[in-house]
Length: 318
Image (cartoon, rainbow, N blue to C red):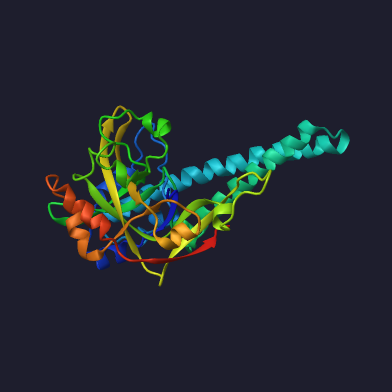
């Protein structure tokens, strides 16, 4: 299952290369400061993509993002101060009476200071790093969909919650960020043939058993362990990953969310030890995929079968 991906979050390029319009209303709603709302989980590249906004609505989105950042930075400053005091008190205790409790306190507080400081540094940083475009389940990404024949970019959460399902399904079924091809006519039937999209991906990450990567069986007494691999298309290029999406309404509010469709792996992925892979569709099939005919599901399966031929290289992720 594709648990993480490096997305394309350059709005100018998405608009120019894929002829899509930005749904500024949806982005404004995502970043809105509604009562009781928590900060949406968004990659830095997606936030910073609005930095050069020229329209009044775009600049309003920038102001909303900056407000979220200011509130988070204030909370992080408080966390660093509180945990720093906790760490210093533990070190003082260790200097007079070393105990396991004090060592645990120093370790936990130190780790929390380090994490908070790293996040604070990321918020203050102006330049982008590759990891700023990486998404995980629960994080939002720009997804290209079609409305009345026009390609539109909307922000959606990477974990799909289908209509008429309770919010607790996110916890009960945490794997719903991927949609298996052999389940499209089952669990995913409400979305397949109705709500299709693509997310533009530059690379993706998979958990792979180390012994499978090394193409060997487990040694006697050896416990299985996983390694994270990043798969890169060769030559490097953007991939249009087939997705299903949903608009959900409930007591918790409105949610746009998506899942990437996965299938049997191509040879390069299988050789690295992984048994699933997201599906890159051909650019020529993009409009047919985004505008599905629910009465002709066979045509949609043919698009998934007629996928873009891609060779992959992989590296072990840090």
